[in-house]
Amino acid sequence: MTTQSLDQAKAEAFAGRMIDIASSGVLSLMTSVGHRTGLFDSMSGMPPSSTQQIADVSGLDERYVREWLGSMVAGGFVEYEPSSKTYLLPPEHAASLTRAAGPGNLAKMTQFISLFGKVEDKLVDSFQDGGGVPYSEFDKFQALMAEESAAVVDATLIDVTLPLIPGIVARLEEGIDVLDVGCGQGHAINVMARQYPNSRFIGYDFSAEGVAAGEREARDWGLKNVTFKQQDVANFDDSTAYDLITAFDAIHDQAAPTKVLANIAAALRPGGVFLMVDIAASSNLEENLGHPLAALLYGVSTTHCMTVSLALGGEGLGTMWGEQLARQKLADAGFTKVDVESVPGDIMNSYYIATAG
Image: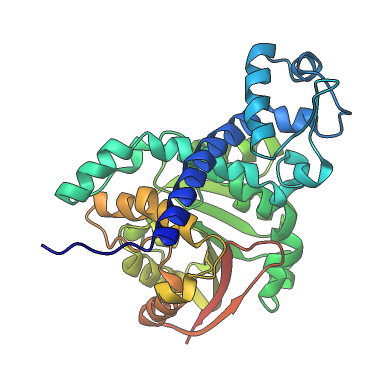
């Protein structure tokens, strides 16, 4: 047995990083609490205020607000004036923490930390025994994803994303058939249906909860040109039925993505287009090391996207399957032309525009 010599400075630096990680983990949970309780929204625009004033405006218990603020001050989120014992959320910080920030609200993401923590024991079992953690264990995942994606959809789908596809806006205005695969709670398809009343829309998702939410929103909006169906998209056979098919961050979660993509290609009419919005990454780890969200996204993949697929005996693509593999799978499905675009402000996704020969 040999004893390795330690670079003491390197060891101490990494120990310090571990302390930062533990602190950031707790701060992430506290950020989620601040988002869910509306504390960041309440504090945005308030002058320097006492804990009681902040609690009153927020409609929350002062003792909890006070202790939470201690974490936020120590973590550099909130500024504190000891002489007056007042707290201020700077506008520069509010721009990343409040609902008013729209897609810029990064606090939404921290809600996933506690969700994934709930399945840690089952995840450890999967490390040891193989298999995966089923989707049913993630009780709030769909609602959180709906909140996360809605901000981007509302800000960019109509004015930025759809115009990426040459000629599609005019076709939607005239009237075409559109399918959203893995529609979740259906917000994206409802937004399109509201904007383009001459076109016909359908959303497929295997979740009864998601389908019900989509139907509820469609009713609330008075939409007559959209329907939803609980459907495993690996087992649908809608040959040449659609002019446009969309999938918003849904393909990498599939148990059988290869089959799903083939089904999508077969379901498009001649001249049809597939818009696949999925994670912006490389298929090669070394090319992702400069990605600001790389560690987060690999972790999300481990705790959800990959393991949910493996729980169904699936391919387990994972969140970070990357552009190279995405292009390969699209080509294998029959798509002969694939353009990859980006949307300003969305650092998470690439926008694949695919057409079959």
